[in-house]
Image (cartoon, rainbow, N blue to C red; front, side, top):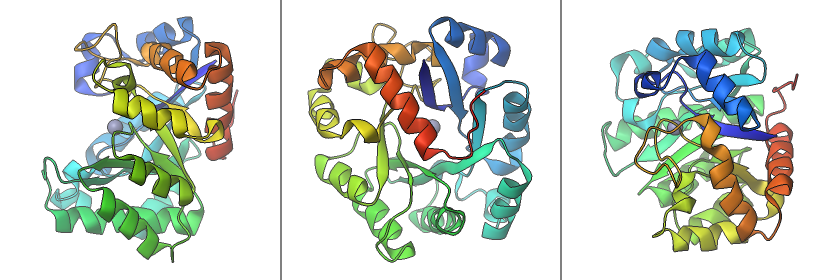
Length: 265
Ligand SMILES: [Zn+2]
């Protein structure tokens, strides 16, 4: 079985393909049996995510604010204590995210992004729960803020849809992170990323769709969905010289080792 360790299954773009029930069924037909649904806005989106994950076995979600939304006044009102309360109330919440920094778009100011990211890191440090990190053109600050908030120890978590440098990858591994690859590694022009993926130890690899974004080949440009995970997993398997079945088993085991709160049914 495969796990999609990062998807946005209730995103408005994905509803063109079907509702949550039909996306989950389509995924199961491709042996994608579990999914982690990532929260981008706590105030507006979390109730919908909780509904979705409560009605399906082997679906879980995170709680967090995407760096794009860090400046949103409603999201800014959410404190560290609020996030801890939310996690303690809902068993199906197994991690914190989407978190991180995005200086490419700067939809929120870097200052607001830092406040939000530091808050998330502290929650993960205090609860020993994984952090899901989005990094774009902010590699040095991502590593620096994690080190600063954890006394250099790091936290458990994921560098999601990895597309940063090899240096960043090695630093993240050193801080205890897992590295998750999306459909990007199937793109022709992504040799650099494939070279990095080949260097990640097997027990630290994860695979994701980031649906509805970044559909893998042969669906590039289309709306992505969890059912497409095996297309990315197959490339990852080739890079590590193992079979797709072995990669499915390994990344599934890695997922459940990392997310201790995810109880498999
Ligand atoms: Zn995401």
